[in-house]
Image (cartoon, rainbow, N blue to C red; front, top):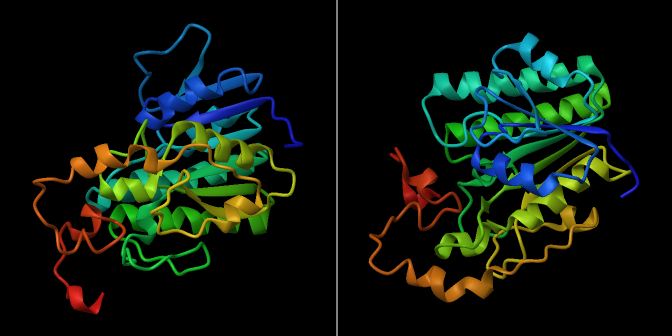
Length: 272
């Protein structure tokens, strides 16, 4: 890790992952700026907060003034209707990257999602070179964000890391999460690679811990120096016990996206 940043912005700082990163990154960089639509109710006296709606380009640009790097967690974090996804995750992400370009921000870590690949079957192991197969409108918005990151890296020189986050939690809580779990400490390691790695131009990696059951080839992350410290199998018994009595989901149980894939499904499962 050769590059040092002075001020890092976390968007979506009031959300679940944002709250965790605020604690874990405190002291790592000289200054952390936090942003969200509303002020977090647990904001500390020494935390720098700037309210900004991602749909307002001018507000986003003001929040980015003087920032060296961004961890972009903001936007809609689950499936929703098209208009909500459009405003929060597509227009909002465009505004974030454009504001970063205008303000001369060096680096963006984009919180993508496993749902950009959710219609791959669980029996298939996929890497970051595979075509996107989103399982939802939310997944489509994350695939868009990855493409936008590539454009701004290639055309405008931003250094961009897209992390296809699995499930961030203290432990995996069911069978699916044994494959996609990401411990917060391992997420921090990936974020710091995105903010500090000297050779980074544009990369997509999977946000997963050391998961024996993983469906993903995370060679791109390992090449950048990622070494996950947490093992999903250490929580196997509790996770599998949570599956008992759960009703079957023919689509969700077959696809990597789980319930995101089965929601509103009207296609032919055999064709998948």
